[in-house]
Length: 194
Image (tube, rainbow, N blue to C red; front, side, top):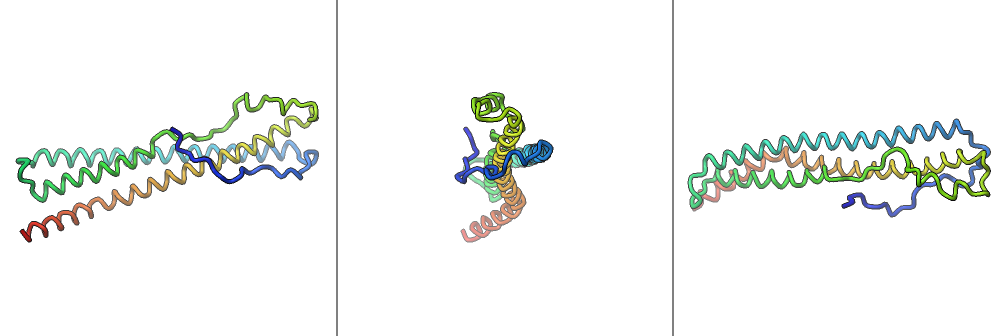
C-alpha cells in the first residue's frame, strides 16, 4: 500500500526561456550536486524518524508488559474489579492505542532516492535528431535536476507527516501518567458515591 499521496500542484520545471547555450556544465553540476545532497538529507531524516519511533515503541512495549504483569498479579477474581484493576486495564488499552498509532510511522513509506533507472535516462527524447549531440549531457542534467526537485518535495512531505505523528505520540505518552491519575480519581469519586 502506498502511503504517499500525490501532490495536486504542478511539478516545478526549469524555466523554458533559459537558453541552453548560456548554461555551463559546471553550473549544472553544482546545482545537481546540491540537489543530490538535499535528497540524501531527506532520506536520512526519514531514517532518523524511524529510529526515534522504534525507541518509543520499545518504551511503550515495556510499559504495556509492566502494566499487563501488574494486572495479572493483582487480579483476584473477574467478578470484583477494584479501582486499581480498572486503572491498569484502561492504562493497557491507552498504551495499546498509542502503540498502534505509532507503528503506522514504521509502515512502508516509498521514499524517493538519488539516482534514476536507466530506462528513464535512455529514451527516444534524448536521442532525437532535433537535439544537438553536444547539448545532450546538459539536457540530461536539466531533466535530472527537475526530477530531484520532485523527489525532495515528496520526501519532505513524508517526513512532515511522520514527524507530526511522532510529536502527537510523544504528547500522549507524556500525558499517560496524568491519564492514570485522573482515571483513578474519577473511579474513586464514582465508587465513593455508591
